[in-house]
Amino acid sequence: MTMAKQSAPRDADVDLSANSGREGGDITGRVAAFAAQLRYEAIPAPVLHRVKLHLLDTIGCALAGSDLDIARSARAVARRMGPGGACRVFGTAEGFTPIAAAFANSVIANALDYDDGVEVNGKGLGHPSASLVPAALAALGDRPVSGRDFLAALAAAYEINNRLILAMQPSAQRFRLVYGIGQHQAIGAAVAFGKLSGFDETALRNALGLAGALTPLPSLHKYNWQTRPIISLKDGVAPAAQAGVQAAVMGEEGFVGSADVLDGPQGYWRMIGSDRFDASIVTGDLGEQWLASKGSFKTYPACRWLAPAIEAFETAYQDAGVTASEIAMIRIASFGVVADKLMERRPVNPIDAQFSLPFIIGAIATGRPAGAGWFTGEALADPVLHGVADRLEVVVDPAMDQLMSGRRRRPSAAATVVTRDGREFSSHVEAPLGGALRPVDDDVVIGKATANMESVGADAAGILASILDLDRCTDVAALSDRWFA
Image 1: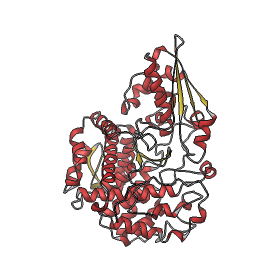
Image 2 (image 1 turned 90 degrees about the vertical axis):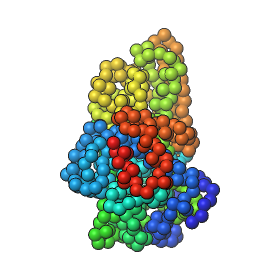
Image 3 (image 1 turned 180 degrees about the horizontal axis):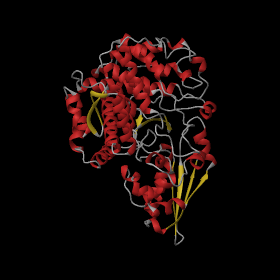
Image 4 (image 1 turned 90 degrees about the horizontal axis):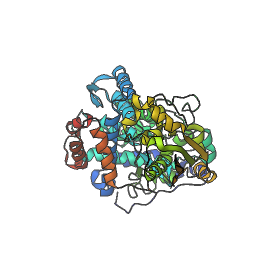
């Protein structure tokens, strides 16, 4: 494997089913070989740095979300699923088995919907770290794992994850029928856990096959849009983490998985509902061009499709310089899904609120900083917040709707704040902040993670230093105890 200049991944715009057979040449075997053989020294420094930022962001999100009701439920499930092991779970000093810990930590990392994503041309492609980081953490404890090995396992998992989801993007027609953005993360989770468990190429290939068999089937179209509250598992990142770790454990105990799960016209892409697949995106230039650094970062704890509307309102509201009570009306122009599915004005729990534009705008207008503070019981019942929510109107902008409905699925929005004295303040946002179209500096990611950690009294400075200097660590398990504080 050689270092090479990174290039942007391709975004296919034609039916790729003709390129879905074995033209790619033993995709499963090549993926397993890449992951098993990858060493820290072969990974470009910018990619390693990016992996550290995603790890830091995930730890911060998990700590900040560890006191939500859904986190308590996840720990309760883990106690029933696999207590008494060596693995840590955020929010408790108890020990759990790897499968139980991977599930619970994934729920908790995703609890605030503040965790990272993958984004190409504005199109969101999942929440990888909420599956991959918990899977990697679940492999700690049985034997010392160096920081370099830990980073290499995560880099391999991100690389395969990001390539796979890009290669499997469905047509617009199929997207309207069935689509889930998290189930494929079972493959990356198996890579992370298997590599850190010392799997060779053969064992890792078997784990990938088993992960395919265990893959969950969440769909964006089955979130309880019309029968709120929103489903607890959202994108299914936790079942994906559990599936990947369980697949590796099952392989260690003699279970046999599909040897060609990613290959052919009936391959993994077809199993999870896509109608096209470009094998060359998965294996082309693997180890030379890097997609592991193509992740995006969220700047709001909310559905990323709402991010442009939230940012546009926040900018206009700041420009207006008024208080919540001085707002006469808020007008949002965006794409159809916002008007159809994301306008619940009285969400009943934090997850429901993460998919409610009126609630989130009310939270910002009432001065609540982004994070767990948006989703307290007091916030959910605040009459001032409700008053702002009730003054929000949404219209569908045809151009924005077309942009979101087409090949790229890029969310955008415009906001106008009308004050009680008749003034108007407007802002337009063309794509979510934090992706390749509108990247954020490292300081933004670090600042967000620091605020999340400090919100629960964690040693933010110590955790930050430990992750950014992870290359020097000889035993991540011992170091990571502070991450779960």
